[in-house]
Image 1 (cartoon, protein in one colour):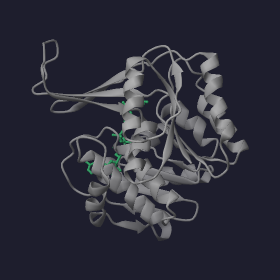
Image 2 (image 1 turned 60 degrees about the vertical axis):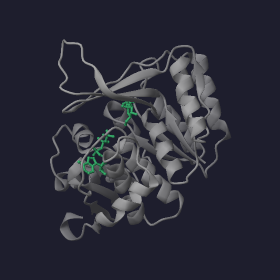
Image 3 (image 1 turned 30 degrees about the vertical axis):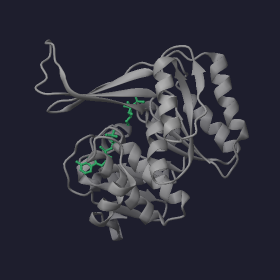
Image 4 (image 1 turned 90 degrees about the vertical axis):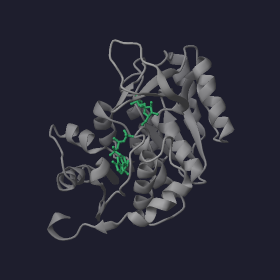
Length: 308
Ligand SMILES: Nc1ncnc2c1ncn2[C@@H]1O[C@H](COP(=O)(O)OP(=O)(O)OP(=O)(O)O)[C@@H](O)[C@H]1O
Ligand SMILES: O=P(O)(O)OC[C@@]1(O)O[C@H](CO)[C@@H](O)[C@@H]1O
């Protein structure tokens, strides 16, 4: 089973406002709500690709019920620990540009954390754990490291889509896959990354540090997959970006779905990139049909020679 962990899920409230004016009353021209949080998005994308997963994390209140009911409707199994506060609401404001306001999230007690760790006891080495998203303020910043320690004991593969200090911590645990975007990769090395070539240099350093697969996404500039033996570069298809929320999660969901179906690493990478772009070109997360439409426009090439 693939388990996705979203420590701080959300209701994503997507609001469209024409000519947004700061300091004034603005009215929406359209709004929608979706369950959110990076691990949950990964589960939803995998479901669309017919790959089962189980969503874990902490939810509470009326917003938590919304998330759980939505996943039930989509037939995505979940095993959330219930907390007393409300799951956060994250505002995704669509005007001429996209802006986001992500909430803090509810408190999580020691007992609730213990309950969460108990779920890992029944996992086996055939399982995969996807850690995705930020760590709520009431949890220790070392939580991802602690989860990985439990996974290591059971030889469970760990995928991590996290940023900032959490990413640094996770890298030292040599996970199976990480997917930083180029800004997050640059932050790790105190530098700014602008191009695929620069990203390759720093992505390779992470593989040297023991990470098995590194996917670096560079939005419209393309993406890289670096493994111990090979590096691959992919272009992204051209299209109108309607919604970038969840595009990165879709890359992870697409890649893991394909790996779990024993596709080659190049093919899995291509499907991941197609899923990312399919989400970027849709109002909601990608569909299988949209991914398939985009696949012919993506080329994956091995990076050869000196650059490798
Ligand atoms: N302008 C674009 N055109 C085509 N595809 C895009 C574009 N922007 C993003 N994507 C797709 O989404 C993927 C992830 O985008 P990005 O590099 O911005 O990652 P991210 O910052 O993790 O995403 P997110 O917006 O979910 O935080 C890309 O690899 C690509 O497939
Ligand atoms: O606050 P975090 O955990 O960093 O990110 C949460 C979030 O912005 O990420 C997802 C998109 O990737 C959204 O569904 C969600 O609102």
